[in-house]
Length: 95
Image (tube, rainbow, N blue to C red; front, side):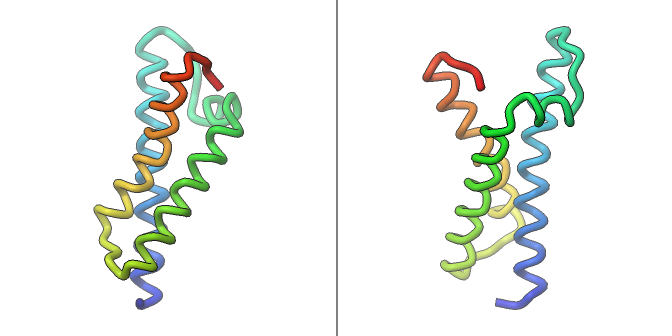
């Protein structure tokens, strides 16, 4: 595994995570809530930290498997936060 592949994987996972966060902010703003990205992250510090940890765990899996691709890393970054949102909605309690 080359250093360039590791950097690319991490950057794409971070980008995927940020895209999902921005999507949520856009949805909230469309519903009339005035919140920015920083305010959104600050309003849910534990969930954001869990999402980042999930992205890191998924990247560990990708690195271990040796199948790191840009799209897989992006998808894992996006889905780490998205998966938490699904669990959150099933619990009926917002964090």
